[in-house]
Length: 455
Image (cartoon, rainbow, N blue to C red; front, side, top):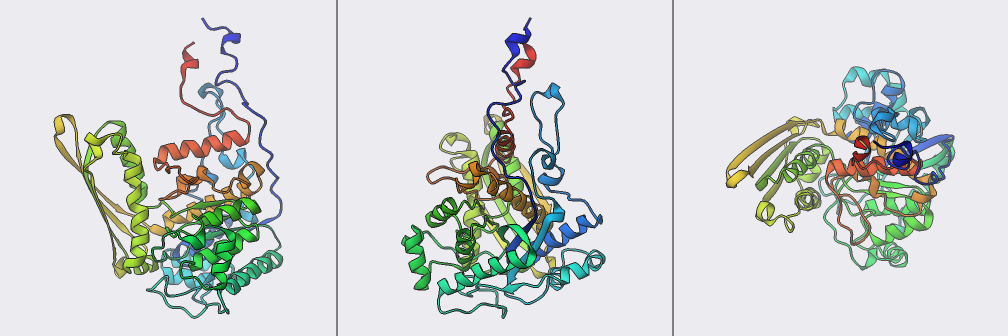
């Protein structure tokens, strides 16, 4: 029989190291959003509705999720928001940029995601948020046109204007800290080039209006130079570039991305790990979507779709690892389609046909029809990322490493250190996220080994 001495120091241990130095939460947290469309307005309106007691924060890990500490028999399972010091919803203040002049109430009505009665209940608050003029060039998002757009002598001038917007908002809102999160449209496909390699080459490119510097990169540059953390909710390169890694570390401004993991890809990151765990083969996975909101319209352009396609296709390759399991996945045929269908609005339909095979190679099929609400799935991700990035900014151990890989849980195409493949398995991503929080607080990491219960 095990003695108290023999079990000491196992999973029962409350601390493996000294907790990280996390600055306390104080004052307001300013949330700055490039792209005040369906996702952004659903997020802002949702936060205000929750603050007024009109609904609850369903879908938000930071607000409703718990975290197990120590052994299963310890019965320590606090809410995440009670375990780590996160900003409260009442601390949040908002601004953003958009190519349309509509205030958040009008933009939310146009997006058609939330019911009119809910919007009316918070109308004065939403009308008080009016978008700043946006950095925009139709070359990078060909299906959109707008008039609420900045002008400047070059891209550096535009970046300086965004930096001034950041400083002005911090002063006018009384915010103690700021976060920027891209909720704008998918830009055309761009590959990294020489202009993206260093701060010097990038700033030279800004002055010379280099074609490989898209508007989202201008926002990211402005934010990071101002020391503001940046999350990228679209598949654009944006901060997934050497220059942004350098700026992030230099200014202690954490970064993460890319592309919010909401509908069809969320389902893939749930199902594919299950197939691999049971050694079931996959011969084909056909995915198609119909979507009628502004995102669907933008993705109707082949160059923007190419950016999204790269993000969506990479998921299965990384999860199933065909090089390690060639008999099961080497010949997998994976096809993704997105079709713009205006009558559907924000209510996207993602349809998957999956051809699998099992014992002795006998074939089977799975069909998934996910009638989802794209912005409803994305809004709580925005909230979690805002709060977790603010936590990272207040934690020196995280702030100066740049890329926040522990936030991969929220993205289709997670950022990693150069040369490191991304982890796409949703359950491994969740373990990474929660173990990071345990690490920050000096708690033992959970391995689920469980042998200590049987000593």
